Length: 234
Image (cartoon, rainbow, N blue to C red):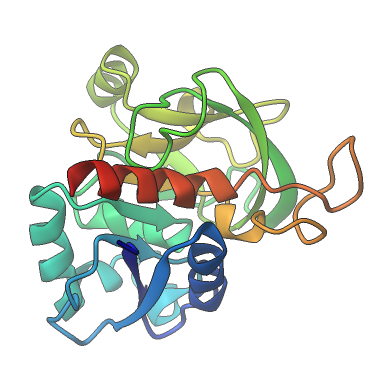
């Protein structure tokens, strides 16, 4: 059985094509979905891609969180369907209350792009099960509103219950509290992160590593993890 992974395109999405390509490279069938639809086309997993949905008006991800298809995403997530939010998709997930906390303007008030070192904190989610806890990876990062924030009680719960999925290493690029780069819901099927794993799935086109320039493929495990999770649930 070939898993079918939907990628939702919103007005202003930039990385939906890259996400579909990453899914195909991982061995699944990418399915293009539209923000104005109420049909998830029976997909096994869902990706909310990066970009500037609806021009980032109001707040990044805030309008997209109320798009028609998000009602279906919420229902699917409640049923355990794996959902990944990348950058703007992460912003949508917190605005839709599928993940805790929020994302605000970078601390230095500038757009940032870099190859970012991360540590995998939780390797038991639908999108991280092919990593090892404590594994260090390099994933491209590009955002202006990537500062993760939450109240003290929420942060304590995230830390105490293992819901921090990824943490920045070497440098905190955007002022995120606790160096948090990504989080998961308690069930482990919904994950959001600011870096872009879909840009690190093919040899020669990923970030620079000590092995060779632009050789990183650390992002591929996100998508193969989802395939593993959907097969386990079948």
